[in-house]
Image 1 (tube, rainbow, N blue to C red):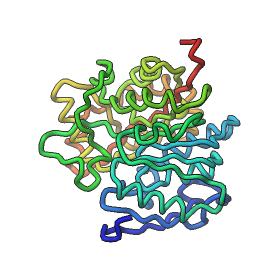
Image 2: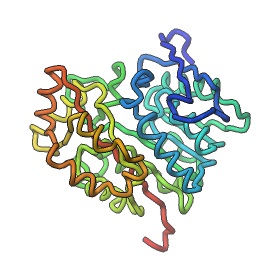
Image 3: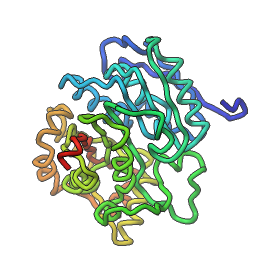
Length: 328
């Protein structure tokens, strides 16, 4: 690790952040060191944090189904909290993790190593684009988790500046289905494509996708990439970095992409108050219909944000299962 890189430090309670009674495989007090490029966990507002409000419920849903992931990988790990959650909840023993930035990966490795109690965890890290850094290093994975950014950059933005790469993406040269380009889910599609050779048959990819687009378009990603797909969990979160994120979606909405939908936080709170994410996942399409009258376009949501109002969005975990090649 570059000792000249400035870093900040956070302390996270796994009992509160992961909503568990007692940590068994990771430290009871998780210390995270973060570089300037690291996505900042929302320790004081778990409802706005992707790991706490989205990844953890999905991992728990799989665990309750009897699906554990001894061989696990996370794409774009950031602080490494998703990997620690997989060690604790899914009993991961081989943990692959990637990030675009070398300093982020180094800090993530330190965060994972420092906070694991179990001594039987093997870490395999790689710096680079999506899953390409781990090609040839990992195989027969049980589970790949990804929470990738969606918004194409404009010329004035720099992917290497601060946390820009947590939200924005560069233009891609690969062939991408038109529906994925229009809905700004290109990286999710490409990750599914790259995951195929790394997964065992029956292995899964969990794609954490802000459902600012119809669920039917999210489900189409699985079939387009040759998987059996379903919605595992359905939940919501407060929009974090609202000016940058909502502003980015509004810009591309004005350019003819999308449309992209947000909701009043109070509506989302009421809708999901009495349902677990797994229960909501089982009836996600019906919930989406019920929420339709409350949808706010990105351009209108940006006006609300600029007035200081909070907006939220739904989140789907797309569960893509690899089936035998003979079924293709």
